[in-house]
Image (tube, rainbow, N blue to C red; front, side):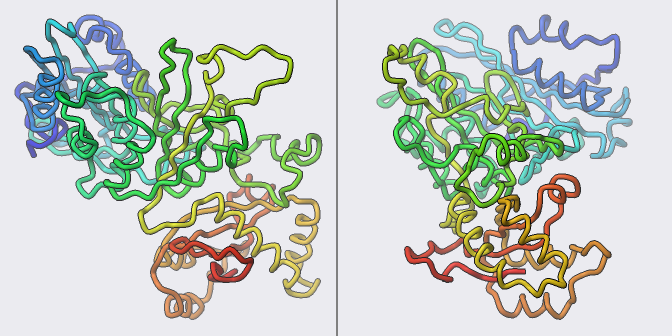
Length: 493
C-alpha cells in the first residue's frame, strides 16, 4: 500500500467541515499558494455536494520518492518536498469513528498536492494526481473510467474516474500527464509512472533531458502500456484525414480515451496535449437536421453519424483542472491559405488548431472506428433493399429515411461476450426479449473476439429514447480486404 501517494498511510489527519461558511479560496491562499487546478477540483467537490474534507500530511511513498530522485538529477541541486492528501465526502462527520462508519457511496474522490522547493526552481505547488467522480449530469457519457483505491486514515475507499495529473515541467510535461490518463486504461498495473515512460524513451535527465515528447514517442508509450493507437495528422492543411471529431468519438464512445494535440499562441510555438474520455449528448440539437436540409453539409454521405448529437468533449487540462467540457468545434483543423491574403504568423496559423489525434483501442483491434463506420454503412445499405415485404412498417420507414439520407449510424466496439449480454438485456417496443435460442446460436457460431457494432436508428428514435432499430457486426481484429466483399461481415440483426 506504500507504492502510491493515494494509498500510503498519512502521518497526520485533520477532519474539516467544508459547508458554508468554509472558504476554499481562503484555504488555497493560506496553504497552497497559487495552485490553479486545485480551484477547479474544489469547485467540482462543491457541485457534488461535498460536506467534509480530510487532510492528511504524507511521508514519501515510492512514487513521490521516484519523482524526487528524478527532479534532483534534472536540477543538479538540493530539493525539499512535501505532500498532502485531500479526500472529499458528501456526508458530515467529525471523528475517526464516524469516518470509519462512512460508506463508499459518500466518497467523492481525492487529490494529492505536492510542493517542491529548490534554489533553482523556487517553490512549485501542483496537483500530483487526483481522482474524482465523473460529471454528475445525465447527458454526460464517460465510459471506461477506472477504480482508484484511496486510503483515508485507517479506511480504504474507491474513487471511480479518469486519473488527472499536473506536469512539473521538468521531468514530465503535458504529454506525460495526458499519457498517464490514457495509459491507465490499458496498463497491467493500472497506473504508468513517469519514470517508466522516460526509461522507455531513454530520458535519464542527465545525458538526455526532457524537451517535450514527439507524436512517435507518445504512441510508443501507449503501445508499451498495451494500447493500439490510430493516429490522424492534421498538422498540414493539405488533404487532412477525416474530421478529428470522428476519431475522438470512435474511441471515447466505446470507453477508450483519446489524446488531442493542438497549437497555441505561445511565441515558442509550443503545442499542448489533453486527454479526452467522454462527451455530452444534446438531445435537442438542431444541427443534424440543418446540415441535411439547409446547408447540405456532408452531401456525399448517405447517413447521419451519431456524433452529430455530440455537444462537448469531456477532458482534463493539466494547466487548469479535471473534467472540463470542450465544445466540439472550439478546436479546429488548420485552414488552407486564402489566395491573395497575407500569411499569418506561425503561432497564429496553428493557434487553436488540432495538429494530431491519437485514438486508442485494445491492442487486438486493427480496424479503426472511422473505417469501421464506413464498412458498416456499406453493408447496411446493401441489406436494406432485402428487408421483409412492405407489410413490415419498419421496413417501409427505414426505406423512407434511407432515401432522405436520414438514417443514424453509431459505431461501438465490444467483444462477442459483451454483445450476447447486450442481447439478453434489450427489449422491443412491446418489451419482448430476444429468444434465448437465438442468443445461444450466436454464442455457438462466433468466437469471442472484438467486433464493431454499427447501430442503425432514425433521428427521432435515437435522440429521444437512445434506441436503435438494428445493427451490423464488423470484425475489428482483422483488416478488411481491399476489394468490396463480405470478409469483415459477421451478422446483421
